Length: 97
Image 1 (cartoon, rainbow, N blue to C red):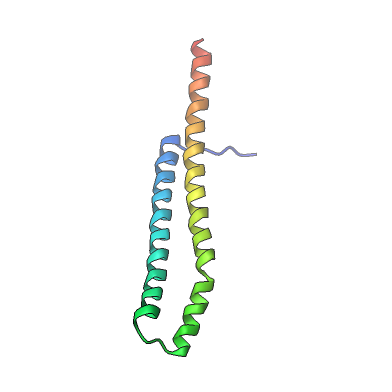
Image 2 (spheres, rainbow, N blue to C red):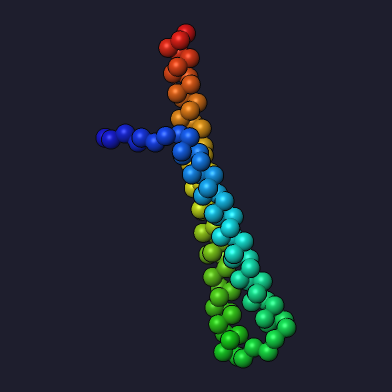
């Protein structure tokens, strides 16, 4: 079996970037749905457009779950990087005794 090789500092850095992207994604989702709600509340929307809005509304939970999964992956990367550093430090401490 091969070994997973990654620079832990890069893993932490990229994990934090991923977390930022998930926040931006969630913010964009909120903006889309806020715009939809404003359109319904303030403008005449044809019955066809209301059907499209309903279909888009059905996807909100999926999109928000996707943002959560992206964030969880970023957190995993950060934790994994920190764990590698912790393990390497433990090995060094053991060697230096």
